Image 1 (cartoon, rainbow, N blue to C red):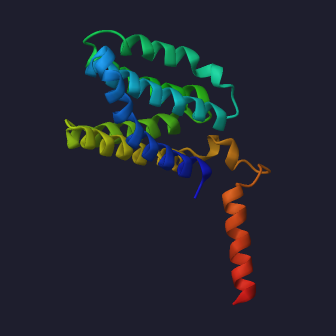
Image 2 (cartoon, rainbow, N blue to C red; image 1 turned 30 degrees about the vertical axis):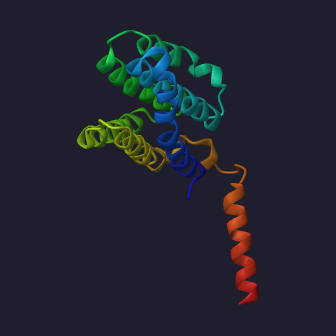
Image 3 (cartoon, rainbow, N blue to C red; image 1 turned 90 degrees about the horizontal axis):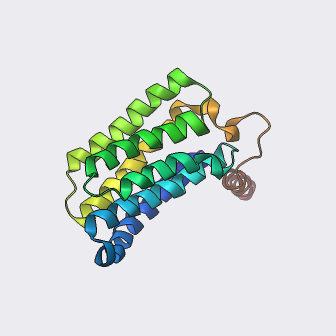
Length: 181
């Protein structure tokens, strides 16, 4: 399994478990809708920094898109604008800023992954906290497909790149088991 895929899956699970409690803790102070938007914004900001790190770029490069999304998160009553702009900024950060090597392929991958993830979330029609947690995790689950659709733009897949420690440990464990058995 690719490092980006594994980390996205784990990050999605952590997000699913953390966004709702974070929004709930802020809800008493600033109200539920804004607390939820800010929790989603923080989640996207952290993932954007991860994407920048994976692409070998400075996390500062995603500062403007994340700040733009923050402005819509604190705008009152802009729920649809926030969610749709969030999907667009997510795509912009991933394919436009971080992994912009193959534009046509990246655009197709974004339509499939972001459109599919958003469609899956809307099909679930999350209204309760548990539904939102499942929706967030499923959204990130669909996002892992991006790294299979646009493999040439990830520096970790380049020839001569440092091997993934997990894969190296897996190969070593297999070698030990093959020698023992």
